[in-house]
Amino acid sequence: MSEPVTITVKLFAAYQEAYGMPELVLDLPAGTTVAQVLDRLMAEHPELEQWRDVTRFGVNLQFVAADTPVQHHDEIVLIPPVSGG
Image 1: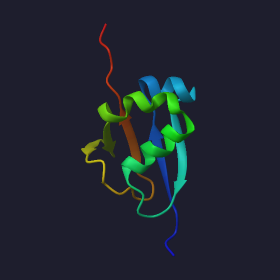
Image 2: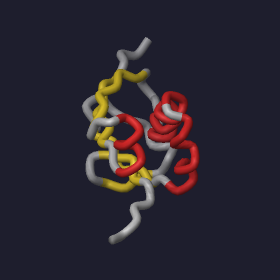
Image 3: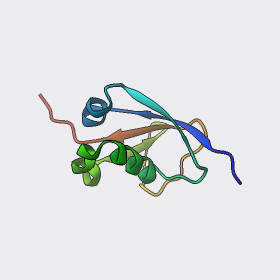
């Protein structure tokens, strides 16, 4: 059995509004993908579901695909569309 991984999720725009904080620290099973991180956040805050198909993923300042597995101490960024102003 693999050890769990601890990651930091940076929250922006709608995600930050839903959680009321700029970041989360999560302990996840080894092999968890960034898409599964998003699934967890949406399970906790269903109002975020509207952003699922337009959210991009970043790991350690690099854009990544949804099926990218997270590693211990990764910094994950979920990037919803942001309206300009």
